[in-house]
Image (cartoon, rainbow, N blue to C red; front, side, top):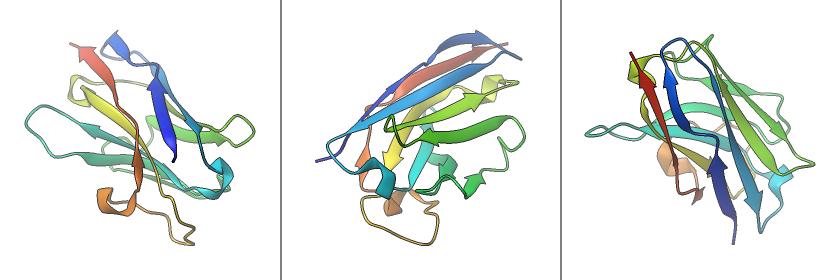
Length: 126
């Protein structure tokens, strides 16, 4: 059973930055595509970014493109989300997710992921 634990959330002013981390255990991390999602109050959970098992392919939602960077360190079984130029609309609970089966295609939707972390709150004040 894969377990994912997010960290790094917090309160930041608009224009600031945060780095989220997601540590994985209980599986072969290097085989999994990984994703970051977020869910704001009253809204659906949405994809923020995704990264292939090699790290060679990434995807970003239009709303974060140019401001967020997803990366991974397979030796540490950890995926990161570096967030710059944060806006109040980035406020949400951020979730890490792992796709438990190998795929050549980068998963971008919630239903494609098999394992989820508990989430970490990011609050951006104006």
